[in-house]
Length: 374
Image (cartoon, rainbow, N blue to C red):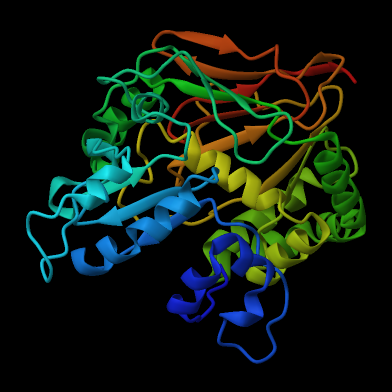
């Protein structure tokens, strides 16, 4: 994230749209001159006096569309300027639609959300929970063309995974895994464009020489896993080494290995793609796995399968993570389908197209069938 220090009074005098096009007029930074993207979310942590004062300005900006407003402690439809008149209801005439859904935050935090203009509170809340259930199809616009189509399967989602599932200790791993196996998955269509995929493939090809170099030093990688203090990095090094051998039918490249500099190289070559994946992951979090907890990117992997390649282990889970997003870049002509386990049966996602993704709890069993051709 990049944080800018600016003059809030000047910001609202200009208006958000104008200010983003002319940031030098409100940002307090000498060398900052780039235009800013128009915000799609505005978070306000101010008193009722300030919230009431800003309300008309906020309403004018909000009506232009595409932006949601999040307030804390006080809501825009009920805020009062206690310094003026406790019975002044002029702010209520602005007709703020406010969601007070419990999944915004715990009751003590009192977080309120105004959906984007034109989106009803009912439609906004239905996109996450509707009386403990999620609509079978949800359309969300997060700036992708065409807009991603989100499908939850099966249709019912329990509103209890956060407390009952994610707070379990390692001693309760079996119960946690069973709950994950019973949990739904979220399927997203058209997440990545063909241009996105082409950029990823080009970046990976440029890393091919590095990958082959790792494979030539398998013994060194194993030694690193045994003696390196950075166990997470060492384990990914070993996996890259074994999967990178010349006869590997399942090649893996850990794009996060090397820390922030490695991710920055990916972002430079594939601008916006990692952010798009992370936004989709958080947006599809119907289980509230990331609800009120600090989370970060743990593993960012590129997998390539050739005939004979698969993830055949029917007990495979992404241990150590809470949420997984798997995006198809290119389908095999035969085989290579993603499978996820639900209750007592496996589901084959053989209808995924390039650019489609599946999000699921990392404790859920999943695998990839053997690629027979392509």
